[in-house]
Length: 399
Image 1 (cartoon, rainbow, N blue to C red):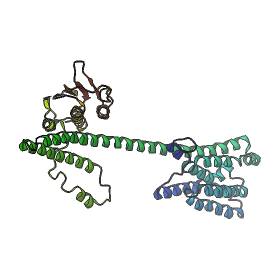
Image 2: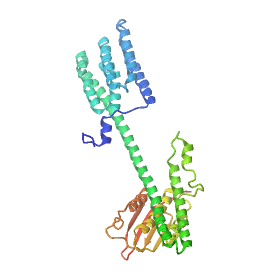
Image 3: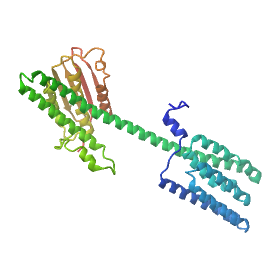
Image 4: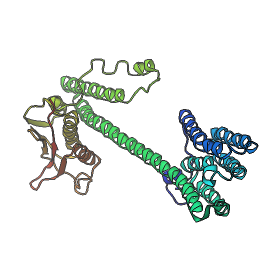
């Protein structure tokens, strides 16, 4: 938090300069220059048609305003002062031109300053632009002339603020999208790494226990570790491929970094691979009873992946947290309107743990996955013992 007590994002929106691309700066200059030339230039030519000596000087001042507008983004305050001074000079030379029209370029500069400059500076500029209002009254414009001028200045400043608010909303949406994407990536990595490491730790412990007495069982455990590690590396590679490299990056270097990882590419996580997932857990000595109903064909990828990850995380929680569990049942029912997932183990969850209270990181991730596809998930200990995870994920079939 900064000294003003506001959050950094709020301080940025309120005080910082907004940077525009070179293309946007050029487009802004051409647009504002065209507006000043057409509106103010025409007014000057009409008003000065009967005044041959003052007309050339007034036209020169209009062209000077057009040229100065070239720097309205880089130095908006200086451009505002210059266009206001030259606009007042045009009005002094040709009083037939209204004060509002003579200061058109200054109003454009005020709009740009309001949109791109610090808000405090733009408010001061707005107050300064209101100071010439009495001139409109003294020149015979009366209350109507003053009102028109003040409304034009206020409209220019408000238009800049509206544009600034648009950019702030777009920036906030981008930041929100980045945060959500980071959270999604974190869930993916957590699901892959937590499950694989849990299985590998159990297998490594089993291999160590029987290494001398039953080397064949030790080799079997080591092969299971290798298989699980290769599968996890393959999934991580798919995840990395989805987020890199950027355009223009050294794609060759990226490929070399991933060389040898998942060379035989396996299909991504899917309900169709539940048997493989169950086998990795069975290799730890846990009995896994898998029951599936329905067909997975046509399931949306998001729902398919969410259901798979929920099962994976539930099995991981059983391995890590279910005390004394030796059996877990997985039931997946694919119907016309939803996918129902139920995972029940026969272990005990330590009282007072975050998992027992339904607030563990894995449980939070599962609930978030279900929520993102419009579904729901409940998890908690069963009255007769064991722990249950039950999810309902709505689905619209794709042909």
